[in-house]
Length: 317
Image (tube, rainbow, N blue to C red; front, top):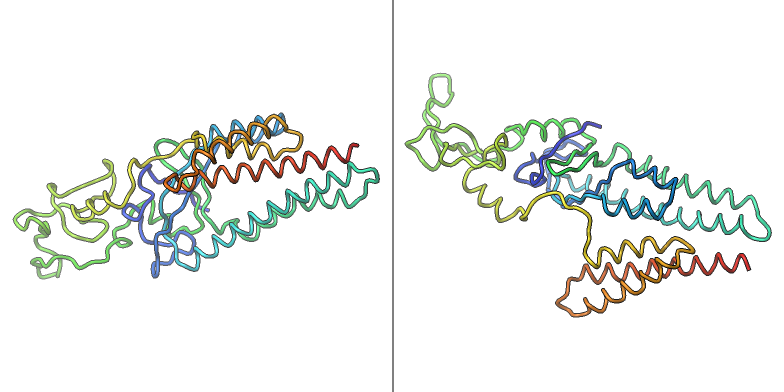
């Protein structure tokens, strides 16, 4: 799949062409909210040393980006369905993994344990191969300057990279004098008829002069004052690449995720205390609902870890 580099703050409908990134279609395209997360791939090698250390380092090094991307409704539905199938496959794989270990560590080990372990690996791989591989955008890198995405459609990649005017123009050009060939003889600014236009707004197609020119960065496509004002009201600020969630609710959720690991009793104790405190602090209706959800999720994950710990201890008794 081709890679595209989108500068920080330009993952929105004002700075991207309306071309579906999955199918390349131009009709019926809508911009949908997306979130991407990325961490350095070398963190994966830490799993060989210690899973807990790898999770902690990944939580600190993870960078996140929010924005919008162009999709057709059908392509958007397929992508979301593939994500749900992938999540379900991972949850089932986790259950098969611990179930296989339980069968192998029991008093009477059976070959079914090896089958369960093999399926725990095969299920996520199969789900990714059949539902997400080459069918969905994939983040390659996130840094302070830009986000690099790998997208399925080459035409959409070209449009994003070159910001083609033909992909953006949807309105009518201002009426100007034309020569014998039919070309504009003197394109003038749509707001200042006495000034010759130097550019065309890449969103609405209006002629603009240097006084009306607006750009998000030096080499970005120009926007007219109207589109620039609308962009300022629509695109959230500050716009940029987010780092890890280091809020109390975010830390509680990460500790809850770590506490899923069986026999990780210290993390489970810390998770219960931290997430309970977060839940109490955010019990008021005016508190952010997302923080309450994170606290509840952390407690649920901790409960799963406690149950797995008890089950493993009973197997050894």
